[in-house]
Image 1: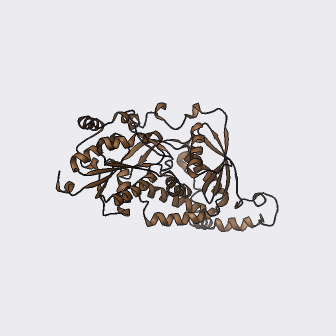
Image 2 (image 1 turned 90 degrees about the vertical axis):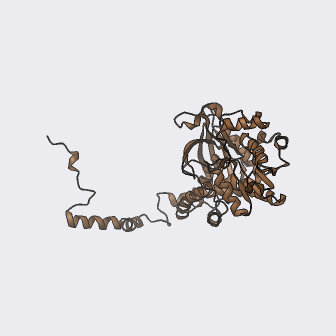
Image 3 (image 1 turned 120 degrees about the vertical axis):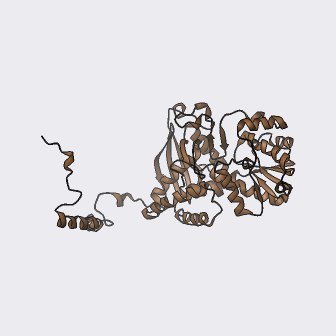
Length: 422
């Protein structure tokens, strides 16, 4: 034990009960000699929470906090990100990313309640989560020390962890069921490792846990109506429920029809690429439906600028910068854009596809009479001639200068290399 370790008397560990955090709990006891308090965030892991209290205590923890954060997760993290339209690198709906600042928030809060000197996490030194946890903790309480065992110990991988567990009697029987590294919450389930380390190989069907394959989905499509108020879902098929129950209902519908499977290679914050598979059934439906409603309630300029900022918002969330002025500023912009995003969207779910088949809103900017080709008072088709002349003026001037200087516009100059001579 070094001097730094001796100074730490009480640690709050972000604890899942899996192989990594089970070994970390024992390692912290062995190397820091401190009191270890465990914290588990209930974000919708279901049976993963069973027996955690007993397991944590048997491994050396003095107590375990389990907090049901599902509603806070949806309302304060998931829905703001969906309203922003944020998608990382075209496909990732950020299911793991925006869970980390919430966990960090409560980890710090419990550390303050318990008078702890430090917090600890089980993130590896190669991944994004170490950054998300630690910079969130910096923003919330930089006086707390952060311990990252993966950056301190000499254990190299799964085999070393298992050997350590066996040596010190750490109960890990229930953590060895899968070769995959998974993260599950109410919003999604991610899969990494195992055969996914080769991005050429198609994932085995047995890997998926939330959704059926599109091939095994029902042969008949199902229509679903989603109602929004200011960009947030409030009802499914006319039924208003608490946020968690409503999202679980949408998740079940999406999973039934094979919706929301994503297989992607992404660029991690730390610089390397990683191959992962995500299951996000309800979130995928909600994202598509929200886009459909925005298409009739947002004006052109606001929508286009919002799409630009959505990329920055996704990058910000992915990189763990939730507790920043920038995120708050982007939320302020998004909230203004969502003032009129109220209405209903009808989608058809069919074998992995979410197909928009209807949208309506009292705030709709779409008017059938304006969009028609008939004569009416709002739009005179003769006005189009002047618009076209002004819109094309820069191209016209450039072409005139080229004709005066060389006889032809550069877009009319033939490429003689393409012609064969007899």
